[in-house]
Structures are given as structure tokens and as C-alpha cells.
Image 1 (cartoon, rainbow, N blue to C red):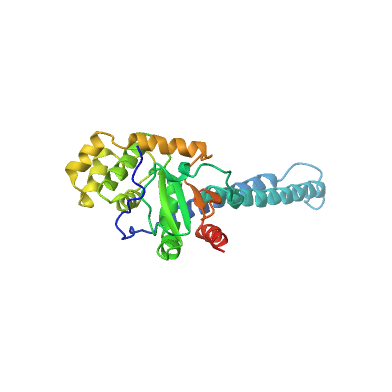
Image 2 (image 1 turned 120 degrees about the vertical axis):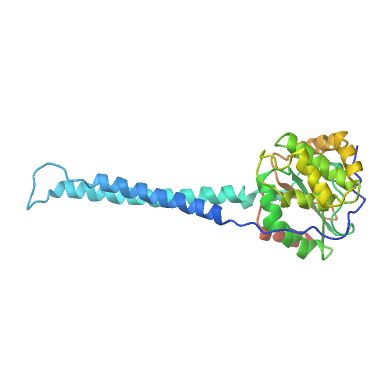
Length: 289
């Protein structure tokens, strides 16, 4: 069963909310501070007085050895601090920028079938397809930190249109959330429901996407609850969700979010992970030249 990707949702774009990275930054700062404390403690133990022949109260060979060890420890400490910072940055950005690459040729149907309705002008020269899971941490990161700028600068200006495809990696709540979004699409409210899901994101497998909460989100959007409940009870769109995930497997999706940008000549660029806005900008601009 294929969702009606030709049927546009309400032209009103979803609302987006900024996230506060303060706790994340504080956590990283604490780790760096701890590394420095550990290095200082090591140096203190290294420089403890040792017994041996003394000259004017100073054992010069021991002092030279201690100084050498101290220099080595400080150098290692600097390397470890840099290593920790680099690893943290990679985790936050999920993948290096070199993961942006031309994609192998695949049938166009694998990208556009079993998907959401288009967001934006259907005649836009570029199409961006996102494979995502509503519980995915990095999908939420992309939604809150990057997508709004893409909507403002490329979707509203008619340069890019967006499709969302389900790629389930996190279990039952993810499947139910995806089904709920397609049930909302039966009432022309896919993107509004998509937005309210990510706006209420609260971690992976924490219960925020339970059936009860999915009903609450639908009620907030003033959906016809009888129709919505029937759609949910029947798991109406589960087959489409499975097909979308299989489509992703066939074109090399291994995690979420994964993006494909397609131009009018059907050239495809793959972007892996919750990259920064400038990465998407560079990709769009290169294809629009």
C-alpha cells in the first residue's frame, strides 16, 4: 500500500522549537575537567620524594627522571584532551563530512514511493528525502537544529521539496508513531503530526510515543478521533512502513537520519547523519548551479 505522496498537506509549515544544548555542553566540559584532574594527580604521585643519595638535600638524578616523566605525562594529557574533544564532536555530528557523496544509481521509486506527501512546491527543482525514526535521537537533533533553516531558505522559496520515509530501528513505539503520522495524513495533516511528534520527543523508548500520547497529539490537532482511532486500531499503514524500511535497506540506508538529495536530472547525493545546516546548503547550492 502506498501513501498518497501526491496529496499535499496544509500549506502552513510546521512550527519548530529550539533545543537547549546547555546540559550537553556542561557534560562535555565536566569530562575535560576530570581528565585534567586525573593528570594532575598522576603528576603529584610521580613527583613524590624518593630515598637515595642527596646533594644539598636534592637528589639530582631523581629530579631529572621526575621532570622527564612529568613532561611526558603533560604531553600525553594534552593528546588525551584533544582525543576526547574530537571523539565528542564526532558523536554530536554523528559522521564526518566526507560521508556526503554521490549515491549509486537506484530506481527512483525506492526514494519516492511509500513516503509522506510532499512538503513544499511539487515543482521544486530539488527533492530531499529523509529516512528517519520518530524516536531517533539524531533525527530529533536535525529537526530542532537544522530543518527550520532549510524550510526558510529552500522550501518556502520553491527550491527544495521534502519527503519523509520511515526507517524503523527502535521498536514498537516507533512503528506506532509512524502509523499515527500516516493516519493523520488521511486527514491531510501529515506534516503537522510529524512536527508535533518531534516537538514532544523525549528520548528513545521512554514512553513519550505510547498509544495514549499519540491519541493526545491527534486530539491537539483537532483530528477526527473516530477516524484516527480506527486507523490506529487497524494498524492501517504498517505494511507501507515496512516497505519504506525495505526501500531504505535496498539503497544503502544503515541508520537514521539519512538523506538523499535528487536534482531534475535524477543525480543523487547522499548525506548521512544530523549534519549542520551549512552542509545541506552546500549540497543544495551545488546542484542548483
